[in-house]
Image (cartoon, rainbow, N blue to C red; front, side, top):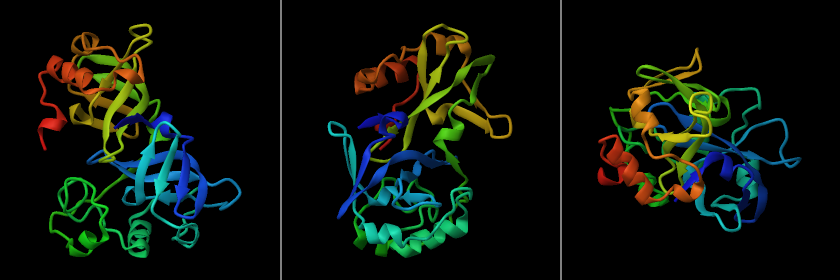
Length: 248
């Protein structure tokens, strides 16, 4: 199911032995554009550090009751590797995190989840996965930080990033929600990460290989109810692109 990052923010986090807090934001990598960690707001339970939850531990999203089930205990989370609130997520921390939980290192392999194209939550399969020579070096970005980045089409600026649309089955970012109010009052559109040419993190700008006119004529995104396969199909046909669901 597709959900906006801002919609998921505030969802309660249910661990196997009690609530641990609420969703705050997400870290994603700038290579596959997949969510690598959910950042939990734990209130006064754990202070002074970032509490990160890997999608490997995210069991289910309940949209009706607005909570996410986590296959971890409160003790496991409390004793997990510590990362100060003002520190970036380093490779050293990620290795320690993966080893502590016994989870695969997602960068050990060419696919979105290392050796697998889709996330695998069966620990038995984790033990079977082996590092690949095709490992890559992830750079993690924060959804809150990238929100507000300018969007530059092939022939000019079109707006800014307002939100992200996340697939809660694969935990990939399917779309960036683009607010074009400074160009077309009131219109919002979706842009898939696959259409991004490059990102200037220094200039806080996302460059996409689509023209302003093509974007202007695309199906308008106006409500979460439009996030269904009919809408997606119409959008991909407009851009003459193959839908991600056809590439499996």
